Image (cartoon, rainbow over all chains, first blue to last red):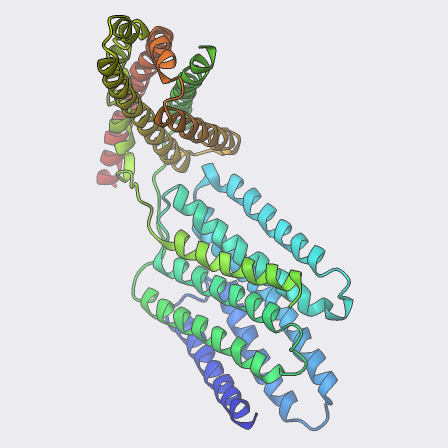
Length: 262
Length: 190
């Protein structure tokens, strides 16, 4: 038990250093103003790491208080993550006014649906309310990111490397969190250090991916402008394309129906 | 581990698999920018296939059977099945190209097109399902001939409407090209 404990502390320290480096890179690359919520989230994570380290070393707090502080702060961090994700979605999709409203509705529906799914399955486990709540939020975030990327893929939207990497980092961590937590749910109280070790390891991977992406993005411009066409022209073209789609579908239906008539 | 736990783990694994898929570039890539106008004015394969379909008459094969050429009739029917499948492939190809164009238009739209897009999603699902169903029936040799021969007559009207739609698109395409030229000139001036 001793070895993983030390390893966990070392990993925790390394992760905090990488988080600080990420924040420094965000400031150096002048990305702080463009990504205020993501920067805020990184700052939150650093504060959480420092705060928890101080609580951990202090003799004033018992195990239960330490546990409550850790999970309480995790709730705040999860909220900051959600805001950073909303910011990222806006960066990727909001410039496309034609499909933005549709994307927004779709992503909100997916998010609410997944949280509801988590609540239904977590019924009767009120003692794990915060933990299950955080898992629901992480699951919803992962589902929303996958839906957003699938949506962007369907419409062939170009996604900047930084945005794609941030999304992948968020999703990988969230999905890993859900898997870790669900696998070790019953063993959580027995082996909390092993569970924390896995969590820190996956988070370190995400932060490293973000650090590389932010360092590269600082060297290139992130903002992109896409072409639009006049509303009247769009209306005409779109209605004609729709008509052709319907006619083709009718052609196919006739084919099917004529087969039945025989 | 509880059922809920297993479901959460499976959900997490599914999300990672979907993430890998969604992060990959799409198979079909439409030419970037306003090349959509050029693609819209192109002629369609399915219209060219109408004369081929008109030549597919049920009487032809029945006539052969009456004359005692059963083997020849089977060969003819196999050929017809192959033609029908090719026709179906072209029909689907055209549908997918139009969907691709509609996506480009939706992305370039200055206003919200949510309802229209939802309708297209529904239509594309119905079309894909029908195509798969018909293809399955053709491959199994389930009554494909009547459908195809009747189609040539029925499709004439639809083909006429399609042609009209194509010509109207061509007109709009000219407008689009003018807009593109104007847009380019404006950018160059600035």
